[in-house]
Amino acid sequence: MQGWKHPVLLSHEQLLSECKARRQKTSGPGGQHRNKVETGVFLKHSPTGVEAQATERRSQAENQSKALKRLRLQLALEIRSQQSAIEAPSALWKSRVREQKIVVSDEHFDFPILLSEALDVLAEHAWEPHRAALQLDCSTSQLIKLLKKFPPAFVLLNQQRARRRLEKWK
Image 1 (cartoon, rainbow, N blue to C red):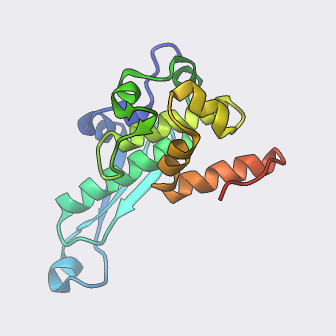
Image 2 (image 1 turned 90 degrees about the vertical axis):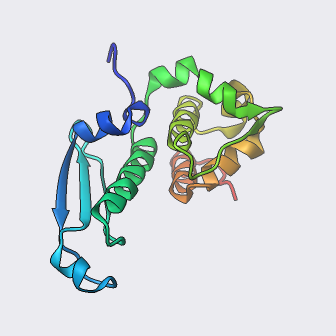
């Protein structure tokens, strides 16, 4: 894995170049434009098999943007990097933590990157938020808040803890 880079760290263009994209007509609101034009976007990240889609907009460009964002979040959720956990906290993480508080909107480009790093460190620390937060120089409650901004990440934490017979977080 020497030289391997987690896919959430790639630019939009780089990530798209690693994806198989499919366009498709979709049904639902949007009138004739939506039913006649292939506005739905389905992305599959070839190296990992992780998929995402967007079909709710009438514009193919808007759906591609949404699908790409969803793909980044899925990659953050599903792909673990031990190297990231060892090197954490990254410069980006340090720039987003102020007085142990994580400052990032779940709409920001950096969010999937930070989420991925947090999950990598949690995995490295056997899904124990207290220990992961110490390494990441943030409070445990801030780490949990970050995960709750993307509910599937919080579900993953509790699934991993249940597998280890640890108490679930609420």
